[in-house]
Length: 116
Image (cartoon, rainbow, N blue to C red; front, side):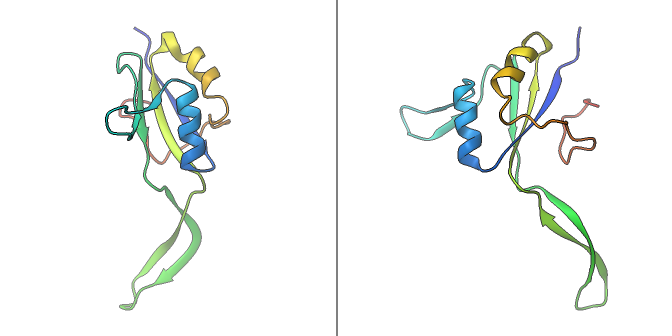
């Protein structure tokens, strides 16, 4: 069995990401509640909407007690990780091309367990 493939997505903002996910058939409006519903067939693809990602700025700060710590800043954009069944990878890569990170991150902030 081929391993599932992680895809790392980033859009400038949440609205752009949700529009792309809608176009790919991965998001919709719940007709009963009017809420945005994100998801798909879990046997084919899995989505994880990520919280704000933070990364070091390269600066060191000192707190009121004299402890030094690394300054962190938000990573620009709205991020979603996708895990896709290998039989459907090409189709989803094409559908998500506008938000697919290229190149993929060498050290993702968040990744699925078992994925290299």
